[in-house]
Image (cartoon, rainbow, N blue to C red):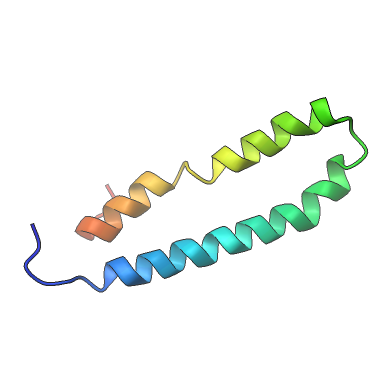
Length: 71
């Protein structure tokens, strides 16, 4: 348990927000050009996967925010 606030929490939250915005903008910019002509049933799994894939590094990032270690 921490006695003092850590600089990692606000920096981590800002980095997470910036990363999610950048990821969302990249997806919104480039993916419709690649799959925009596909039927909706073909686009849905792609967008579902892209909506989940950003969660993969999140666990280690949250551990770093809390403890300062990456593992």
